Figure 1 (cartoon, rainbow over the protein chains, first blue to last red):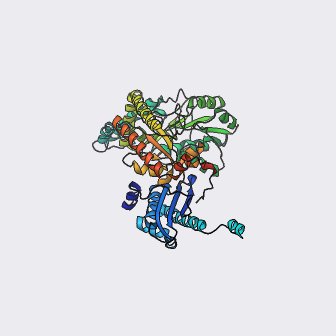
Figure 2 (cartoon, each protein chain N blue to C red):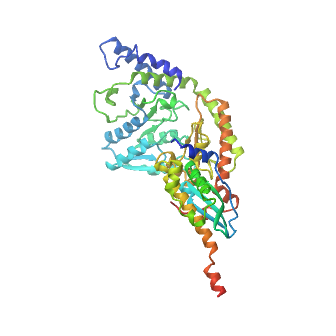
Length: 137
Length: 390
């Protein structure tokens, strides 16, 4: 299969590879996929709690070149976005940007899922846990 | 293809263009003579008589002809066939077809080393068993099945033995006499011959094996395979077989040396690397390795100047890991992480050294990228993680 130039570029020079401290309350972590399916993505966002802006994003991906490129692209797009704007990133945007063929669309879906999982994790950390709230009351 | 093979073939496209079945002019005689010479070269490579060689379009056709031909011819004697889970699709899809038509098929599992268990084979035999079809060496993991023991058992029980020897013939010594093989599928392009030519060995005595033709027509190949012969292709097949017979011993030593050098490099420089299938009972040129926590297709992408195959068929639209590796019990995750290296006649030691360096470098880079490798290094047990299957 021929890869698009943009997929090759992300594969050869992946952006924002790495990990953030997942114990921080302003770091959201999303891990999606499964090893037996051949794809696992870990995507993390570092959010400025005052402004709600994503100041940093990191990823690690086990998967094909298109999966690596999709998650690498996602971290680029996340940086500088507000948490709510981040949720507006759609898998079709990734498909278009990377010219993914039909058999690789699931890679973009996985990247969108990873974004959502990371943002949800951040939001969950920001809302007081029900148990904690109950204890206070 | 070997250039010597091409040279042998060329005249049969131009000055010697006759049809081997044309008995009444010199062009036909010359073509027939060339085909008979090739038939003998092929027979000599496997210890057969030239009259036992039925020329076909390749191993897929040979497998179909052997298995369907026996099932039809011996239908009155029984309807049970034994084969193995790791066979080539040309065998498995053929037996699946026969299952629909009323045959009973046993698919033997394989052990973790990729070999069948002889006791399980013995237990699978019934009084209705007419055929055992077991590949000589596997196309993905290169493991060599115990054909000699299977041949002895089949002969004792009066059951025919077919083997798809596509991968083995020309690479290791194969003798239809010593292994008691009754039917054997071969192909030219796996021994540096042209594509689209193959053969089926059909034993003529002790016992005389009969098969029902699967292609009706002019009665070529003693009625077993009708169709005008591909004379240049067959000449190339014969030449390729003759070269293998002459050079096999030295070539296999060289390939084994290169294969082992590559294996030692990869196992020495990287952790969590696993060889799929028996290393002892294995073709000299094959290496099938799983690089844990690295996905096969992404690894292929990083070494795209080297022609290798991913054990997982991700490159096709199915995204299914190899059924052969799954049969070894490798687990889908390791099956997704496997690469098959096939070292050939024209590979140099420099190329092998380059491949080793490049693979190590790319695996290290991809592990830096791999969340699984990171988790394992942090002490996470991946089998206990709740994954979101998709």
